[in-house]
Image (tube, rainbow over all chains, first blue to last red; front, side, top):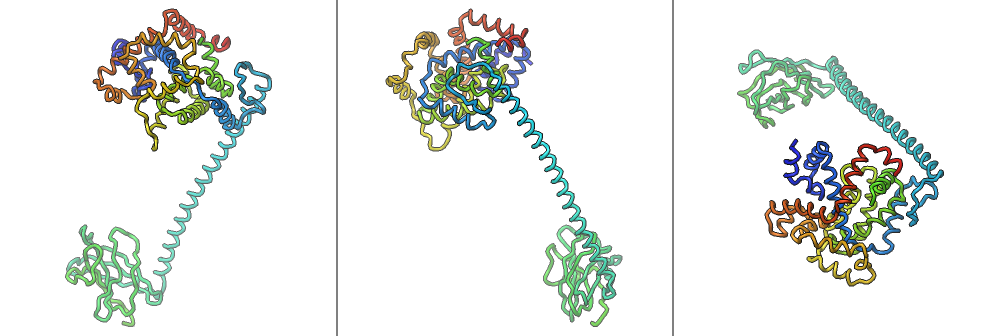
Length: 265
Length: 203
């Protein structure tokens, strides 16, 4: 905060009077007006001087404009007390009994309106909360159903668990594939495959009569079972390391785990 | 205008007493219209602006803070901002000189502009204010120029503009407010601080 002299030297007071100050500057002025209340008189007297000055530029307003304005304001305010319309009789300054009744009624209506709006708002809030909770519930149910489906699949007698064992590239690694001919469905458990480098991802292939066919791209980040494609007559399942997005042909030198599929061959 | 009268108006405006609008229009309408016309330069637009401004004055009445400045200043700011907004909208063509409007109106005998007795004295007063101050105050206060825009229009450094604003307002105060009025204002506001309730009741 500045001393009164310093503050007056900034010229901010005059700018404030003329309406030139932005909100931060206005705040500074107001702080100093609080500090030096006698300066408020400066503000008022400067503004009064400007008002007197402005009057010399007064130009008579066009006829009809006044009633247009009064009519628009009348229309705006639906809460007008019955029959209490604006007239040109602007010398009235007192309040009549009916005016007070009108205001009381207005106050009651306004209170009632706000009360209702408030109740409505809190009801609305509750509803929104409940909808959100319900949606979460539905999400949870969907997840549950998915898990149940997978569990059911795993439990089927027709589901074959194929163990994929590590090769020279990763001797300790092993994965599992749940292969089901009847259901034409399959899932893979990544198991202990090592973390691939940033630019590579695992791809799984089925060996069908000597030809390697891709049955899925694996997401190393996912911990749950991942669904892959079932292909008939697969003799073995093989996981290789490929560039991100996969390859058309497997990079055989980067075979990590594989296993034989039992069955009709 | 006495302070108590102004307070009455403020209270009624804050209470959404519609009769106050007619009264404000009678007191200030011509003054505000004159300023608006100086900014927008066209009568049709000026009418719209005054109407919009009064509606805003009505709607925002309760938010007027009497400690921040005079009622007239508050209303003038609303009028001026509305007028300036109109000039910035598309399809608005500014006429270059203000002389066009005022000359036109001074020749129009339907307007009693020339013959208002209370104005004649004022015009003489204003002439006491030097042109260099009057020019800047008119650009800023009545036409809504920013100080930067003033430096460009008058080809003056910003420092000069700012100091002329300060001195101009001081001079304006001296010209328009006699010592007696000044003293009265001071006394009234002192009394107001000491006895606010009394003033409210006696109105």
